[in-house]
Length: 460
Ligand code: 4AD
Image 1 (cartoon, rainbow, N blue to C red):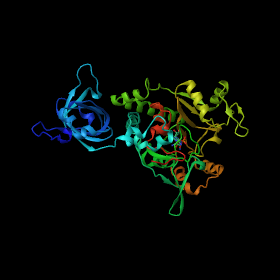
Image 2: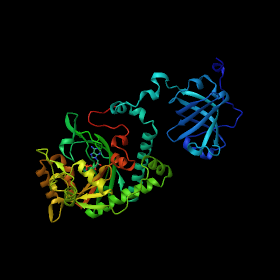
Image 3: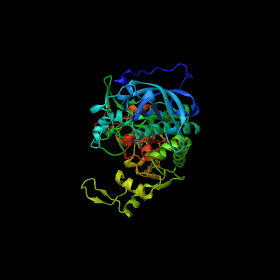
Image 4: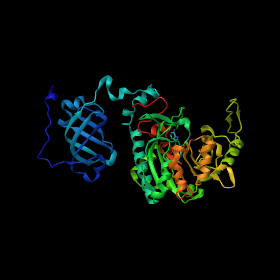
């Protein structure tokens, strides 16, 4: 009854508070500040209320004492409510810890948006038994959790670090379209839609467009969504994923692999030079160490031999019987992962047979049944990059369309690249969610996408 009558008023005789995000509080110690955020954790004692405030930039311990702890709002406060708090930032007393090493001694506060308590309370939306599909439906709430938010913070910094590294290597960023009328990686995973009465697709890869940019901008890259109508549910397949692709002109196959290795290692260095990111990566993936250069380079034919020598078998496509791998096999996800985990280092698996690879890949001079192609395999995840040198000769490309049963007509612009000043060139695509699954040691790429899409799921 008493508490209902306690009304807090902001005391204008006190020093004017500085508005700040939580991450900016360090230089404001001993001063009055105004912060806004969500009640991440709440502990209420008789005369005191402890809030761990969350604003996306960090966490802040806040202490409400005296009248501040006795208002009606204080008594009915719930986690995930939004609040405005004014107070003084104080280093925590010796022997105590708190995020940032300080806490807010509150002198005025109010609830902005109360979250429900009782059955509908935030924490009751989840429970131990929540199955994967319930959790997926609640992705908009699970991203408020510390782990999910940490992955999303690292994701943002990783994209920035890649951009920084590409710019340092003189690659220019472009933004190719997502609505296209050509396939890149085979017809079986195309999402088709009606485009003003014409057939169109969601892009599988921006590679073909990047190739057209070489004569205009030189080396280029893009960070763009790609779409694959994957009909299987695996740990590493999404229907929509963020595809980081680059294309380089006047290079050799060897240059291509060295470039990929440099971009990945330098990006990790840029990322970890930010102490906040180094801390998040260690929290998510304890003991993480950047990979050493050069990466192991393994010929596809040696990989087949490795698999057979180490008893890593595969089911026969027709009979389903388990047996040895043979040259020509598209090494399956499980086998590839087993080999990568055994070797436990990044592997450039290269020179795949022509028949299991895309139409545009350049055959190896003098060994034309194989291609100048490469996948980068990482322990725990497997393939995170796919790339190759491209057919530079126009006649050879026309033959490749024919062999693959592709109508060259819609590809006229891609063919023109070989007509008006061709060059030896190559590039690659890196699955951003797979890279993150490796870096942050997540079980599945689904944890590395903001709102993951996979077969049967496009909600929320
Ligand atoms: O190996 P992919 O299919 O290669 C290409 O699309 C080339 N055109 C890229 C290029 O050369 N510019 O795909 C490249 C990478 C894979 O290594 C993988 O990391 C990721 O894209 N990827 C997927 N990630 C999540 N879900 C899927 N369904 C993916 N499919 C490919």
